[in-house]
Length: 477
Image 1 (tube, rainbow, N blue to C red):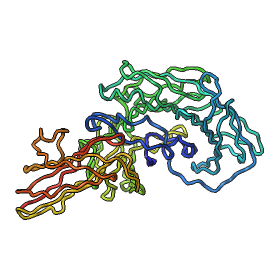
Image 2 (cartoon, rainbow, N blue to C red):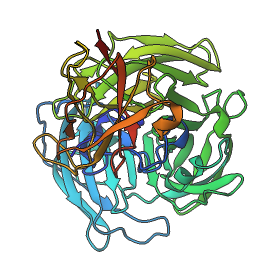
Image 3 (cartoon, rainbow, N blue to C red):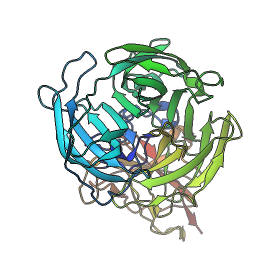
């Protein structure tokens, strides 16, 4: 299973190769076991954010004879055993020139050999809980040894939330990223997952790990499509005012960050596809919220199907005219694979503090409903078929079958009903069928007596939210 590398926030390419840490190596973040469309119910089953890096090829190896070693400690000074430690050498274009993995022992000790002499070294630690700590622009000696110990401090944060249930459900699963600069000027990064904050507190409070440094940016990833920032250089972190001074963080110490406001978080969402689902080629109206004036945003899209289509929409970019709500059109490629998510990402290409890129992602479920004929004589029959997403389906691997309900109406319908019970919106149930493990389904033969519009509704599961297909019209003459 996979999640393509289009996710929430970016750190340097050194993290891309960190075992289990970056999205390129993590389990998929599937959708949402929620009662309604994610446009209002949120990604309730989505795990918290994790760091993402551009997919960059490993450049030619430049191994040396150096040894890089040190200890990994927890916040309270206890050794962290079993952590994955990746030591790498990255050039100024973020190509990974060399890397080596180690696992910390019972005393927290790690050690790798073969390191080249460099001033662009990076060390990233991934704990068993999925948290990540890392430093870049480190000096490694050859032959060495070079010693770097890693022990985080903490920052506490508070957020005035702007939404009520069911959005609260995600506040216990925030992905929190903290970026800073150490005393020697090297960029440092820490990511904390699931720290158990209360989902009903006002304001919401919690803590996150941070390596010793002057903290300069913190990203609260509420959802994949909503990120609140505190940053010294960001004008959106508090009522549109400029940022504040860096906040010192010490190993084993706790620092306090200013109050943030969810209502000015960066956010993207689809406004014209109520169920966030439909056929390949669907034109999506993407709403952009709270991007400050002059912010340039670029867009990428990728199908989660194996070997799925990707696009940059012709390198389309958008220049924000100022805080507020704006929208633009992005079309799901006609070649997008039915039965999978198509991920739409909006990102600020500016690399901040040498380690972070703001990136937001929302998901569109690609599904189909087709008729054997779209124009028939009165009395003729048609059969309906299509593909919907099903849990566990990955390429040739079958997943868990689910039910599909097919509805019809004889008055014009350009879009699916905005209600789970379509009969309350003038539709009539004509069939209930079951998919196979690949999400494929088909109906019995149906005989429309006049021009008819059909739509299919499918159940949700642990990977995908329940939703509707696009509408198909069968003309009767």
